[in-house]
Amino acid sequence: IWILIPKRHIVVWDSIPSSSVPDAWDAIMEPFLQMVPYLLVECTATDEIRVKYGLEPYTYERPLKSVPTANNGDCGVYAVKYIECHALGVSFDPK
Image 1 (cartoon, rainbow, N blue to C red):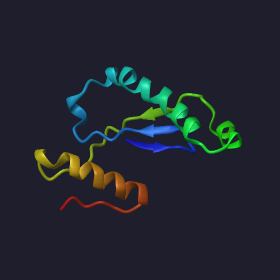
Image 2: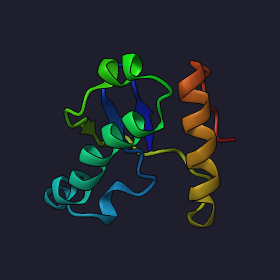
Image 3: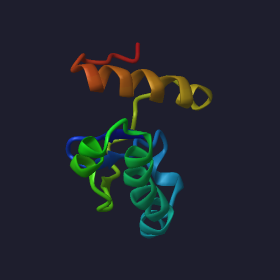
Image 4: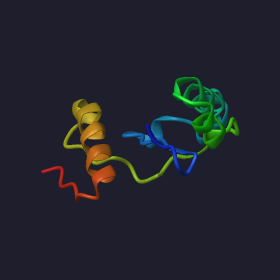
């Protein structure tokens, strides 16, 4: 999961996207979309910053392009590294 606070958006990277039902994702993500704004407001230091964040729910996307993996057992490690590289704008070669 990659949370983009300024854009109020969550990207869910799934290393095996074919293993889940796309229609179920709205129900799965709804609690997170509602909860993240409340967590940010609760953790802010001042009322001025609280107003900036607001309590409107976040949006989300689940890219269908999967995270590259070398084999079935390393998807978690590759997913974390892929997200890190993606966030930094660095290309990722799984080899």
